[in-house]
Length: 319
Image (cartoon, rainbow, N blue to C red; front, side, top):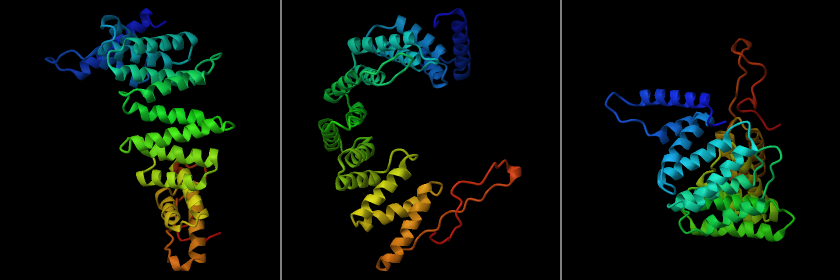
């Protein structure tokens, strides 16, 4: 399929267009790996596969260019749609070849991370997960001295995988232990907020350790949640934990942030209700409850099909 004449013609034409756009009359030819990567970013996986495959065939096995081309080809095959067993199997074989032949540890470890993800996902009808294999690859990465930043992701994914066995206390305990060890070993890690966040959620939902969860989630909040989409939900959880434990010093700033920073979240309205209640029941705190932003419904001529979400009048009272 990937070697068909039509696909080759498409890929070659795109390569010529990219080269013409990216280079001047006296400039050097664009690197084929760059052209392949551009096709991949554009989600044109057949074209990317063809270009990566051609580069892989001419590069020295195990070298830098060969590893990049092999990995790019594997990812192109894996991401192409509709998914098929043939493409997925070939992608896995390519990653195994990288693991076995890569001269640079980074390429070896990156292939292990991808192999772990492939093992725990179902990619096509009839495919099956292999959590034991995935965890084995994650453990290899965690134990590798040269894995660097990949250790953070491997630790997170292994911890979440272990925590999914909610009926197995030993797996939950190992999950928490892995996260704690990584946090202590990598205080400057890029994924440190997510490590704290994951630790807090697992301690809360799997161990029922509300004090430990409060500590972990408050640390993640200080560092800044990594995903804005989930930040309101996690902030709300943090605020509730703090209120349960009488920590107004932690709860109030988080609730205020929910009102001001995430006005379109459903938690914003709930947070303001709680702040109004706290102000009423604890006047000594002298809270100044922020108003909710009013989202006005656009006119019908502007294309509106209904009322805007979270439309609450500014300065309203607690319902």
